[in-house]
Image (cartoon, rainbow, N blue to C red; front, side, top):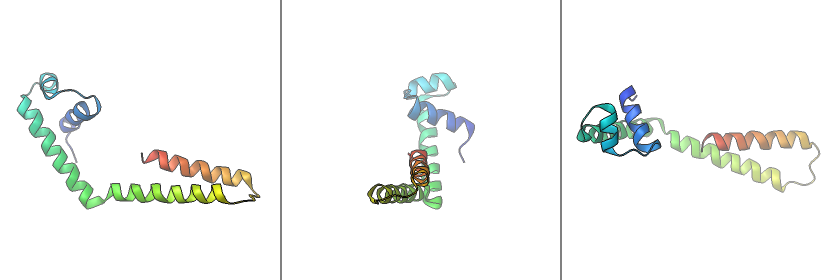
Length: 99
């Protein structure tokens, strides 16, 4: 897991699009310290991903959701529209969750 400081630095760098210098100033560390922290955090995240395979699992969920949605959209006639709509909504929610 990332430390709170690593999480903050990664958030600033990737989500808030701050420069290394801006982050260094905000965190009270050197620009090189920010870069080192980012590189260490990236390595930790990559290692975790390699062990847990979250991205692979998420993509499988997306593919299954796509398959279900295609199946629902192509079947005619549909006798229970409320059930189909509910399934469709759940699939879309699952798909949106993992994006």
